[in-house]
Length: 627
Ligand code: ACM
Image 1 (cartoon, rainbow, N blue to C red):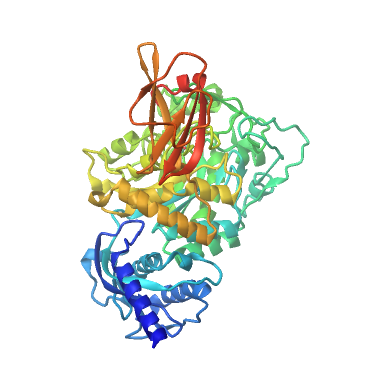
Image 2: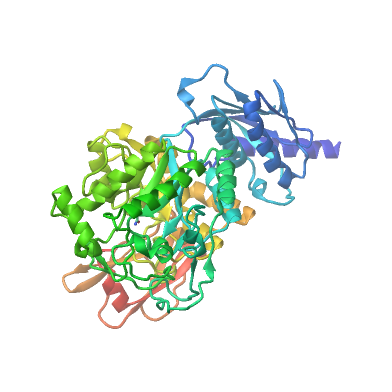
C-alpha cells in the first residue's frame, strides 16, 4: 500500500513537473501547445514506423534511446506503437520537405512528416524533450518521461549550414562524422567542407596524386599560427592528412542518412599554396613554395587590401591551369551528389598576375586594363566547366568583382553587402557575414579566451537577421556559421568554438523571426549546457563573463559593462583588491579615476560567483574605447 502510494505520488509529481516545465527546445519550434501529463519510456515501449523510407530514422531513434536507457527497443513497421513515425501519404503543404508534427500524450508520441527528413527532425525534438540523461553515451539513470505536447514545426530557411576548415588543421573521418552528428541535433542540414587552402590539400584526386602526396603535408611547427618560422629546403613534411575517395563516399553517405548535404569547397584561384607546392608550374612565377605551416606570409593594410609575400594563386592565363581544374572538378563532381561546388574566389592577391606577361596578354585580349577582370574571366570558365558536369558554381562574395557569372550563387562573408548586391542582380545568396557568423572569432574576453583578430559574442550571432531590408527573401537560401581553424588544432576546441554560437545560429536559420528572443534562448542554452555535459561535448561558457568596454568623456575614461546572460550582477574594484559580492555593484557607466588603476570584475548569480574574473590595467581599458 505504502509502495503504491509512493508510486502514485511520484507519478503525480512527474505529471505536474512535466506539465509546468519549460520545454527548452533549440531551435524554437513554430508552434507549441503544452498538454497535461507525460509519457514515460519503459523497456516494453514499442517503436513503429510506416513505410520503408521511415525505417532508418526509426532505427536511429531506437539506437539513440537504447544506449542510456539500457533497453533493447526495436523499430518495427507498424500502424500503432508508443513511439510512431508516420509518413504522410497525402502531403501536408505547411510542413514542406523538412517539417513535422509531434504529438506526445500520456500514451506515447507520434511524429508525422511528408518526408523522412521531417521525421528525422521530429526525432531530434523528441530527444530534446527527454531528460538530459538521454544524451549519455553509456547507461544512465532517469525517469524517461516526455511531457505531453503538440508541436508543429518547419524551417524558415532551406540552407542551414556550418562550414569547417580542415586545411589549417586536419580533422579525421571519425571527427567529421561526430561534427555532423552534433550539428543535426540542432537541425543544420548543410556541411560546407573547406577542403583546400594554403596549409593543406585534403581530398584525394586520383589523376593528380601529388596533390595529397605533397600538398597534404607540412613541416612541424608550434606556437601562434601566423607567426611560425618559414620552411627550409629539405625539411620533412610530417603534419597533415587527407581523405581518400573512399573516406569521402563514406562521409557523404553518412551525412545523407542524417539529411545533411555536403558542399565541397576547392578554394581557387587564391589560397592555393598547397596545390602549388605539388604543382608549382600552375602559378605565374613557378616559384618553389611549401605547404604553409602557419607562417607570416601576407601583409594586411587594414582596409581589406593585402599583399602576399609568397605566391599562392593559380595563373588565370595558363591553359594548363584549366586542364588541372577540369581533372579536379571531374572527380569532385563524381564524389559529391549535391548540385553546388564551392570554388572559393576569396582573397586572391593579383600582384603576381599584374607582372606576368601571359596575364598581360590575356588582359589585352579581353580588352581590359583591370587585373581584377581576370578573376571574372577565371570564374566564368569555371562556371562553364562545372555546368558541363551538371554542377552549379558557388563562391565567396569576391566573385562579384570582375564580372559575376550569370548562374553563380554568392556566399556573402564581408558583411551582407555582397549578398544584397548579388540578390539585387538576381543571384541566389547564402548569408554568412563575419559580423554574425564567424565562429573562429574570439567569443569571450580576449584576456580569457585565446585572442583572434576579431570578436563575436553569442548574443551578436543570435541577433543576426539573414534577410536584409529591401532584399527579396526568395534569393536568400539561408545561412551558415563558418569555423576557420588556424587556431583550432583539436576536436575538443572545435566544439568549444562552435557552441553555443552555432545553437544561436540554428535558431536564426530555423525558427520564425517573430519567435526570436534572447532571454528565452539564454535560458534554454543553459539547459543545453547541461545536456552537453552529459554527452561529454565541449562548449564555451563565455556568456557568463562580464563584457568590458570604455568610452571617453572629454579626457576622462568611462567604464561601460554588460553581460550576455540575463540576471547576472557584476561586482568590481579598481583599488587592487579582489572583488566579491560586497564590492561595488555595477549599475551604470562609471567614470574611472586618474592613475595606474587595474579593473577587476566578477559576475555573480544567486550569491555565487560565475564565469571568469576579468582583470584589465588602465592601458588595456584605454584600448577598449568604443568596443
Ligand atoms: C573568407 O573568410 N576568406 C571567406
